Image (cartoon, rainbow, N blue to C red; front, top):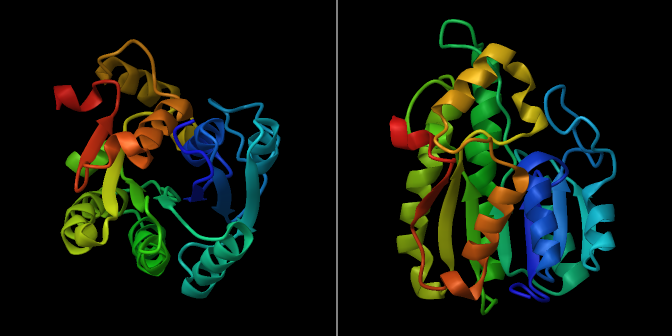
Length: 257
């Protein structure tokens, strides 16, 4: 097992990509804190239409240990509590995966400033909060890893004036953090997913979904497991000399941009 007994936090772990990451971590023997605003997984109209069981229940079915911690990642005090509870429950922290994110459709002329603040608050500020608060604990680990979930939209527009800039900022945050904390033995990397079959895609029309598939080089969309396996690699000893990197896991979507 690549992550046997390593202690992990996965934000946004109840649904979608975060759930996929947590399940792959469980298969590799990790102990997982699922951090999310809700325990019940989201169900989509296009994808994940029949998901019902909480992530921790699925983690336990795989023979791993898991806890659910209800947390708003944009709230510093709640994130502080979640990290502390993880450390108290499992005895430390080895891996932080900042996956929690939201998307509110609309261009600069439609989206409200309040909605812009909310998207950036979760997708960028929330990532910084969890990262900053986790570093003191990761310093105590022999396997310190930070993995940020960005997006293929970090490299281009088309996802709105809040989502795409926040994801682009995460890519550069990874580089900056890698330089700052590399001497502490902590690696920092990002995964940039393309279209993944999750409930978050509900805002799209069938025509937009078909267009996304046509732009994807491989003949299918991604699954949460695809991102989960890439995150397992970055969290494992196999990637101990990889830091400051952003890995596109997009089925070739960005190759045509």
